[in-house]
View: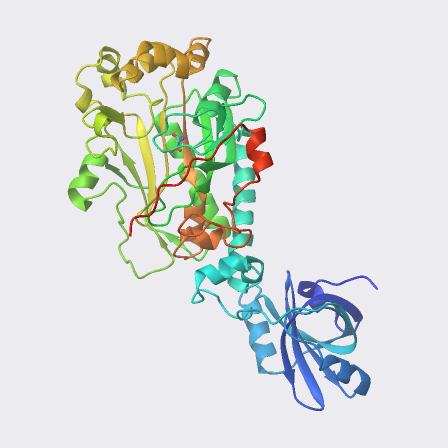
Length: 486
Ligand code: ASP
């Protein structure tokens, strides 16, 4: 017999079916036994009654055992079934638990037994110790809340792909093994065996590659890109996270902002119709005004902060291009100029002269924009310097010697000088956007296998030691760790 997914059982009233899934709940009532069965598509109640042999076998079943269940689909007529049907008639979303029908069980097959789970799968695991959840992530992900989070993430990504394709974007993968780039954070590095004593870096973002794709005439690029930054894990950071990364040629700041606004509105309307966007078009605030009024550059402008369905988008614009590195960890770097977004940006047109001349540096405003939602920065980008001389001048302001500029950015300067269109882009923090849309408190709730607060993954136990053979192949000798001082 072919398997029926639980969500399709309503279409098979009166028929004999086979379902396959997990025992969710068992209620043994002596002469009868009730079960809830679960598969990826839904839940349904099953009942064994009168069939002595089946009943005896059914009593052995435990939660989380994997089973094949044979039975007849019966329409339910209790209170819950009525409430279920009424909700559907009102046009509400189909609940995960199908209460329209139940299964009159005629037989079972145990496909796999399960140890008693370390926490309840039938309830939200929000209150369970996170280390325990991460150690048993495959169990955690079985819960309805986590299933929803992961499925909505996939649905959202799919919708965005479709919308971007309609706008003539193409999805292009860029390398994960790449070169160390100066994007502001520390790089994760990977030793090369074939070129000993040399290292790849994992991308902090595909910034240079996406710009090189504009040099390559692709015009409109996007990618769901993994970005890796070796930063201290303050707050809700992950060592690796996902950006929806975009770059466009022949555009202005206005074009990029308009397109992104359209994408975000479309996404909310199609996948989150219960949510309300506070203001369309999205309001804009300058960096200066945001700092003066809210004390930060990601203002939460919600008119009602208790409303989980209110989305207050705001663009933050007119960022200073450079700032002094007064708070740098490196005492040598203190007092030097650094970039506020990335070194590849362009200034607003009226400051291009200053940018070229390296004058009036503290007043130069970048052609840069951040998109903020409910007090979180969910994306940021800029128009880029497409003239190699401007990029060279920016890199000089940032303190790079001409020799270093050639060594580290020669390829960018060459590409820009090879006929590169004016271009600009943006990247969204996709995990964070999904966190807000799903009303969750951390991005870990939206990532299937996140790292914990110390950057470790407790289930596989990464990072981990490697063998001496592996080290020898890489010509790596480990230094002794400094002794811990009590
Ligand atoms: N690469 C930038 C970032 O990661 C985004 C951009 O400018 O497109 O923040």
